[in-house]
Image (tube, rainbow, N blue to C red; front, side, top):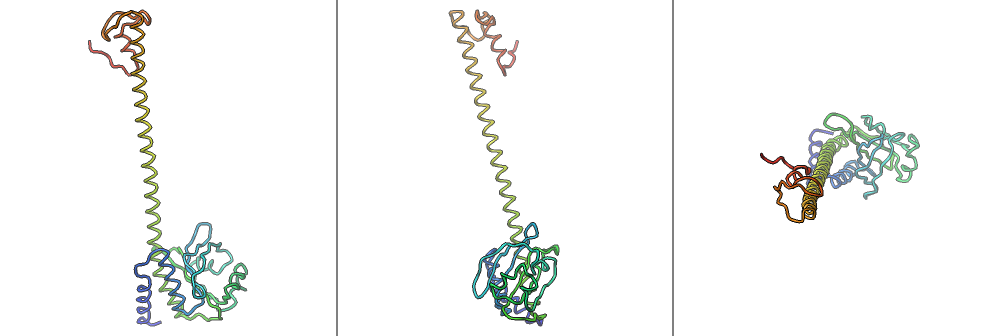
Length: 246
């Protein structure tokens, strides 16, 4: 592919995905990639924990199909996730028995896959095209796939940052909610303690009234017949009571 052809293709890619993000972006990418290489199908995926991959978009036979999650072991994608451009011109199902039934169901015989790398150079996803005919994939085909992978890498990075920001915001919200609950519970406990203290003070005063037969002011030094303490002394022994000035 000449430099001019590459620039033209890049422009077509950008025009196709203009204003699209996330799922809509990847669906447009696989549709346009299949058309650019005149292939039966194309899909893009991202790397998942446990050496698994999850499709982000899948175009085959002129329409979108269900995205799959699958183990990499024993598949051509496994080599792509090792950072290798992987091409099989014919009988790809015979080379990878794990995927033979799937390839036969799709009528696929040839496969070309390329890694999608993040800004550090680590493989974070991949792009692949498949065809129902035997196909000796040319350097120009790889160049086309590489251009699509570069644009996909940028969107994968943006999606990853967005997911991390969302997770951080959700974690912060949970922390704030927990703090608000703890503050509310503490305020309620303090209110209950203050109410209990007030009830206790009133109960002690009432007992002294009943014992002496008259109402004693709180500063009265007269001892209560029931408790043996004056109201002043009783008040000073209540929880949280402050010493009275002399």
